[in-house]
Amino acid sequence: MLLESREKVANVPADYRFATLSDSIMRNAQPEIYALLERYVTTFSQRGHQVKSLYLWSQAPGTGKTTTASALLNEYIIAAVNSHISDGVRPPEQPAYFLDVNELQTLYNEFARPHVPPEIAERSASHYYAKVQAAKKAMFTVFDDIGVRSATDGFRGDLHNIINERVANNRPSIYTSNLAIEEMTHVFDARLFDRMRDQCQAVHFAGESQRGKR
Image (cartoon, one colour):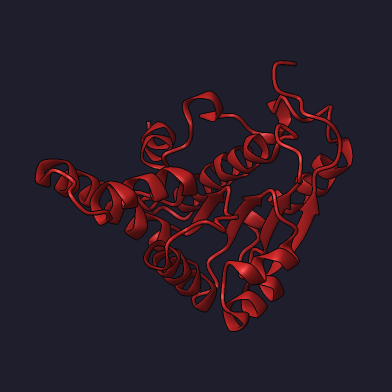
């Protein structure tokens, strides 16, 4: 019950809820990456260890970035729940959060552009800021599809603030993108990019799209 409730508030896409590395549909398509990630998830349970952030990228769609990021988030929830239970304390209500950056930008546009009906703007703004706060405060956050070159300055600034708070507080994040990490200099200012890159390990997903091959 504890695990199910944490999964529910983590905002994981329905297709990937409860998926782990061991049963991920991308495991056979990306064996070298999954071998690396099997070692990575062991750090979730190591006391006093600073979990590193990861930047999962490929220019091609459908190579498994979102699937894998979701599995890592689920692994983190499992580790967080188990470690707190073993210590005899209640696990945090929201140890991890999945942020769909495109969805967040859509919500922003629904209240920030002119002539939006007030009831739509208010509802979208409420959902937007709830997601912003969840992404900031979760112990572990996935930023799905982070390469937002066409974003307005206002939305880009909000995204910048979320990531800056996480970087400043050493909260691990998983980023997925169709841009190489070096290209993120077009998205963030140089100082934040340098700090983000220092805390991140870039992982390149090679190969063709696996969509429709489940």
